[in-house]
Image (tube, rainbow, N blue to C red; front, side, top):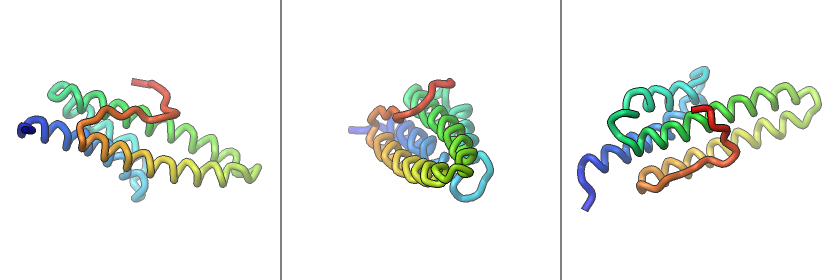
Length: 116
C-alpha cells in the first residue's frame, strides 16, 4: 500500500518534470525556472524529488544549450531541422519522465550534461 507521503513525493517529482513544459507556453526560460523552483522548495524534504528535479533541471539546461547552437546553425539550414528535432525530443522525453516519476521509477534523461 502506498502511503500519503509517497504519493506526495511522486507528485512533486512528476511536477518537476512537467514544470519544464512552461518554456513551451511562452515563459522565457520557464523550462529551467520551473524545475529549479521545485528543486529548491522540495530538495531537502524528499530525496526522490531532489534526484528527479536535478535530472529535469540538468536536461533542460542541456536542451537550452543545444537549442542555442541549433539557432546559430539556422543560417546553414540544418539548424532548422535540429531545432524542431530538439523540440520534439524534449516534449517526448518530458512526457516519458513524467510517467516514470508518477510510477516511482528513476528516470535518467539521455544527452543530459550534469551541471548540478
